[in-house]
Image 1 (cartoon, helix red, strand yellow):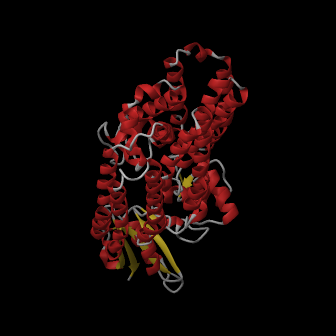
Image 2 (cartoon, rainbow, N blue to C red):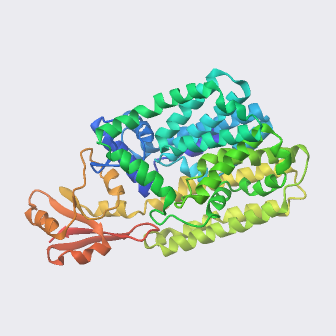
Image 3 (cartoon, rainbow, N blue to C red):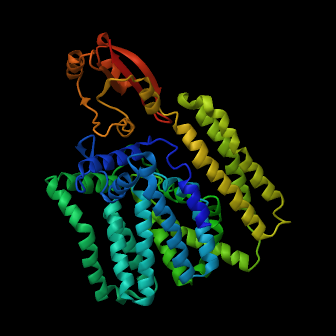
Length: 514
């Protein structure tokens, strides 16, 4: 199963261009650090980027060194983290629960479209999820064995997680471990001297880079990262990513589909599962993450993902128990999956038709029709088939769905992005400049190792540089957003191309000097 998932994650990894906002900024930031051979200061378009710490940049820089700068290399180690996450999940669950629970927990993640999609992106979350699982998994091993190697591995793993995302990567796992000790009536172990040693190891791994970047940027990174991108995101809604309390539990439920739908049945048998120490540990981790990101004012689908492996353990334990006791799969699960699978091709067709750039390929959405047909078929024969046969069938169906969605349809859709189309309209011997706002993907897809987008903030400076350009040497193109055109004197430019950002509000406009 893990081998098949690895093939799916790697297959056509570079087929979709780097276009999504977060991917473009992270991949380009790593590219700029790579070109400067700078392991300390993250920059985007030559300016300090305070959004994220450096761990995922380092991995991408290593990949660029091995494979060259490309979409594939930017995503390579994200896939490695995904495979590692499945391996660790199986290992710790098989050791502290049983192999049946380990199999089903791993299967829950391996069939999750969100899990697979996230681990094919050049973003920090794959690294955070992997090292958080490694830290919490080895932490549980320490609590059960008291072996030095496990607490040392816990400290190093959570330090690396902190280098991937920030202080939340220590705070939430630390709170979960504390609650486990309290609920297990082992609170005296909180004062174990080994935790102090672990703290020293943690700081020796995590602190040097934060200190180095603080010193190198005269505190600018510290101010931007810790106060704006951590405290502000928790206390205030940022970039329109907010919502009510219930959003986070729904994100977890939807993110773990299809098998995640059975979490309701697992919770129904909560008392039986709570009595198992390892399952109790997993449940408390899920509660901590869901509660924290439910009260956070900024909410995004990737935020609670470090708890997905532990939610999968809960579901896996229930599924294994169901198989052992030869109980039927709940009817509601099939009905919900049938409704969701029916909505997918319809929703995809509507979304692709509504988006100007993708309307020509909207018909391909109907290739997903096989999913409701297959789920409906399984529903009809649920009483005649064994539980094993139904699970094998659902696994095959959703594996095929993930293959089609991630490897075929997603790249097909995102090749229609405005950045790729606009670059086709730019001729040879040309220079591209930006006026106020531009899509970050223009930088990574420029195909020039020395490329840096000059950005002009006011109309006068833009007009001056365009008028001073020599068309005999190169042609000057301007990229901006459609809503900025009213501030530019239209006398000196011609509109060459106009393309809408996929499933977003802005429209990109390419201008050329008359």
